[in-house]
Structure formats: structure tokens, C-alpha cells
Image 1 (cartoon, rainbow, N blue to C red):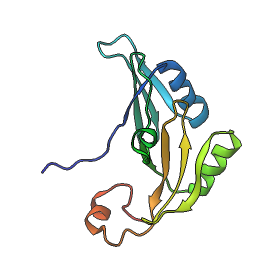
Image 2: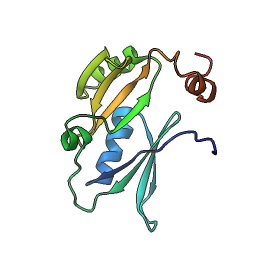
Image 3: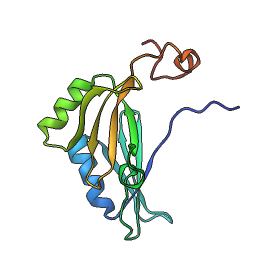
Amino acid sequence: MQKMYMTHPIFPTPNIRKTADFYVEKLGFNAVEYLNSKEPHICLYKDDIEIILTDSNGQKVIPNHELYGYGYDVYIIVDDRKQIQKEFEDKGLKIVKNLSVTDYNNEELVLEDIDGRWLGFGIKLDTDNWENFQNTSPVYKNK
């Protein structure tokens, strides 16, 4: 099977520019607009992350935690979780779960975005059982 490298979450949103502004102003992303294309969207970029915003055509965004009772809408691997939590706190962002270690051995925190989505930020603490993953993932290589 062909090797897969990364994913780009696609977030439908009722106000594409307002959501893009949140990610740019509060989370430090850069935005590139493709609003005149056949499928209008905005791409958000930061480091190795790309998030694609699309127009929800007036539909309300229903985050996973509301729809299913738990779960994040995206999970972003980060090295310095304490620093990122401090940055979010300093900006007055809504942290719904403070930095902690989960029962599945991730150290993570969860932020709520302007549309109510939960964004997980963390890393797997014990990757000993992930030998193949460690050898192929640019995130875990050389850790």
C-alpha cells in the first residue's frame, strides 16, 4: 500500500471569514482564500498543519462532542503542551480540558474554537508499542 503522510481536516462553518479570523488572530494561522473557486474555501496554515474551511450553507456546526457525547474534531500533535496551554490562557481562549494525562496515555489539552469545535492538542506519551509508526512518522522520528 502507498505510504500516507498527513491529513487536512475540513471544517464546514456558517461564517467562513469569521472562523478564519479566529484561527488567524487567536491561533496564529495564515489564511489563503479560494472564495471564487467552484468550491469556495479558505485554507489555514501553521507549521505542518492545514485546516480547510468550507461554507456550511447555513447549516449549524455540530461538533463531535455534541453529536456523539465525546470526541474532538481534530487532534494536533504538539511538543510543548504546557507552553501552548499558557499561550491559550494568555489569549483568553476557552480551554475545555486543561492539560492532563488521559487513560489512553496521551498528555493533552482541549480548546474550543469559535464554532464550538473541540481541538485536541497533545502527544502519545508511550510509543513503545508503535515501532512501525515511530519509524515512519515524521512527528515521532528522533524522539
